Length: 295
Image (tube, rainbow, N blue to C red):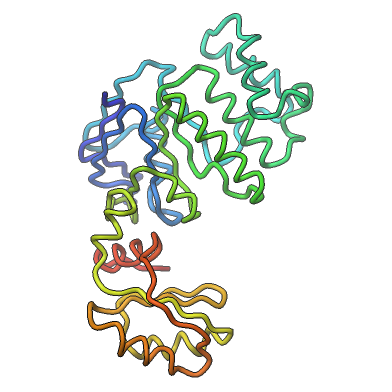
């Protein structure tokens, strides 16, 4: 069953176009990732889906009741001067929920916040704040959960714990649409939408996105990354990405032997191997094909 459907959805603020021509259908039980850089239009999309921002074009149909969708924004938005428990009771009151004692206790226990129910929300750590935001969102037992970069600024351990919670929520039948700047998180999604400057560039699961990516991807290791990156760029790759001592370069389809030998012969290169395309490779290609800037 489709929970939410957008057709040619658009949102414009004066001359600035935030979202343009967005087509998306979200169904029960899906886990979908909206991937893109800052300014891609992800937050505006979430706000329209949550009913907080009016579209300026297209159609949006939500086959959900008022409590059927819950939205967790990028920044912590619960009152910091209320305790953990007070915040949940306040949220329950906003939705007219009664007899929520057992549900609040169950939610707090599920995220290990039960011992902190009397602590002011503003005094929680970043990871604990996200857990509390998740509890508040789940209080209404939604069918669709919207999460806008839910783990940005959260330490790696808390990030892993938070995703374990989300997988549990998803296993219970809640559909989830999330955005993230972390490519490893993005790969949790069953379906990914790559977004840039308000448009969806590519859509599909990771195997499908990899299969559609043309060319060969090589992974190089070098402690002299800057010098090697310039040398690789001189070989005219289709895409080039570098981080730390790792360089990834995509070349047109060809016999991999000669290009691998040329890369291995570059001064400073310690290792070269043919690599499976990852989500960054796919996104760079989608960006290039759309004529967008990578900055």
